[in-house]
Length: 363
Image (cartoon, rainbow, N blue to C red; front, side, top):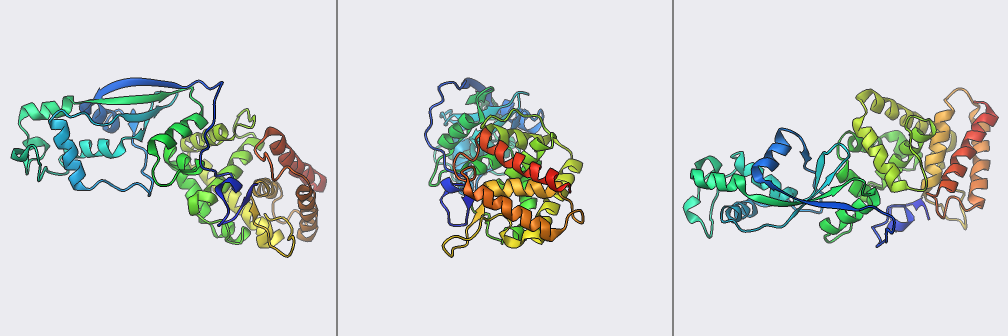
């Protein structure tokens, strides 16, 4: 099902933890490289070829003792675990696993902390990188890090599964949490900003919480299909939702501030219009068995899109409310809002239906 509530299962919101899937036709490319710590530092700080992905809150930040122990291991030539990175079509790499280790190495080389209480090399206690004997400075800079590079055209869904496997801890990540890490930047900032709008909270009855990024997932879906239906982006949608949302995240990261401001206005106006016409039940189906039903994800994205097509003051709100209520009743009687909501057929049905209503009303 696609209904979103604060206490619903992830599988009911489209935010399911990754299930094990088989990809018989997927091209999975993983290469093995070696880089010195000096090269890694240069790729991050100078050439910007490598981007350190943000940490999730569930991952603890390394304590200073862990950082010092790691540096001691490198100075002794002890192997450390491999690093995983993603590489895009432009050759830019993004850290998947190994950020804490890499950050500790760079911080030490930049003089941000000193070695203390070393168990194997106590003579270096109190030393910063610049204080090390030249031989050891060189040894640290030449230390080889083993890096596995996940290359294009590895599909986004497969990349998510790889990401999940190498970052798995006490709680598996859902797709939106992974997107938040893999595409951190203007896109994630925009989603966070929109999720905090009062108009969004009003139109959804303040019932779509930030837990597990449910709110941002809902908004991303709307933005994605809005951009697709208005032909602002060109994408061949064939039930490939993960690929599509990843494409939109990359698009939002590349677009300018003016585009983000325009999308913010569109979203805010749609939310205000929805609330003005239908109240806080705008994106819910009618009450059944005396129970108020939760916000429906598929209903949210297509009705929000409808309200972008119907600016204020151009339609009688009472008439519009009745027409939309009737449309929601038709939607509720069918199956396109419960099962296989991301299929090409379901998506086309939803959005062509609201476009037809807009033309009928000529608003």
